[in-house]
Image (tube, rainbow, N blue to C red):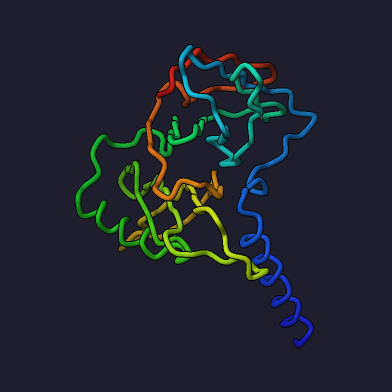
Length: 227
């Protein structure tokens, strides 16, 4: 029992170290399998701001894949398994997304459910003292929230060194309401970066970045205008 307890403590300590030290968030993303030949090539319309990072999230798997921003500003995703994908493109001050969140969601979320979901969101990850819900998708007993979080207060690394920038996080969080009250069933963090920007990123929903079916070959998308 002592060995098990020590192992559990060691695991938690190591995990905390990863979360505290690796603020770039690159550990969030799944590495594509060489046997998967699906791909997406996203081109942006002329005049669009240059991306800093781009992510593809599988609708079925929920797994995020990191794209490669090319010299011409286009974005390539390689080794994607068969799925439908929603993309998120982050620029210097804005994140653009096409997340489906929930299929066949209702156009309006009842006010009582919206307030109850906001209360559940407030309980998540106390490290972040700034939270903004950008979109909520709802369908009866299922809901999904697109959440941005950021650290307003001073953050300190495991080493004791102060974090110079502001930690930002973007999450997709799914809830279910089986009997009474909403329960968190899955959370997918799709972005975590230390930025000089102290306020939250601006947000734009871009429909052209969502519902992209990928099978065994490259799917070309765009040109998509970003602001």
